[in-house]
Every structure is written in C-alpha cells, then in structure tokens.
Image (cartoon, rainbow, N blue to C red):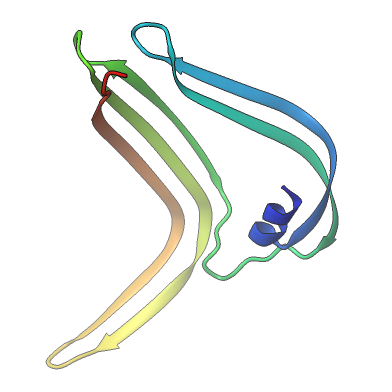
Length: 127
C-alpha cells in the first residue's frame, strides 16, 4: 500500500490504522457466491515526498449509481450505470493551426465535467 501510494502520488505515507474493510458478495440465482470483493481502507499520515502532478492532472470528484439485474428467467444479465465527473475549473488554453488553404484556432477552458452512461449485457455460463 505504501509503495502504490508513492508511485501514484509521490507521497511517502505511514499507515496509522486500518479504517474499514468492506466486503461485497454477489450471489447467483441459486444463492451461491458468484463475485466476491474485499476493499480495505487505511488512514495514513504523510511522512515525506512531494505531491506529483503534471499540467494534465486535474483533481476532482465523481459520483454515480448503477444496477445489475437478471433478464427474465435466464442466464443473461443486464447492467446500467451513470457516472458524473467534475474536475473543476481549468485554465484556458489557445491552439492556433495554420494549414493551406485556411487557418483554424480553438480555445479550451472553463469547467471540466464528464457525464457517462454505460449499459451492458453478459451471459453467465452455468457451473
């Protein structure tokens, strides 16, 4: 966990304590465990390093919701999810491109948000 934090953020951390363990078991139609997720959350203290960002990094937040459901009385599973990303205000950038026969320019900046809707189907093969 410490190595991953250093690689991803440039920060050295000390684990203060394990905050929580979240376990999610998704069961199939017969009640057997089909998917099993375990997420472990830690509270950490920064002990060194420097937060690494580039001009392309934008910090923000995301929120979403989704559902997964059996389609009829079959092995087909449908899913839908919505995600909203908000990366806050971004400084304007200006690009000018000259080409024959014309010229073009673009200006990017303002609030950076992304809304994503995903849907999918899958088939669960019987064990």
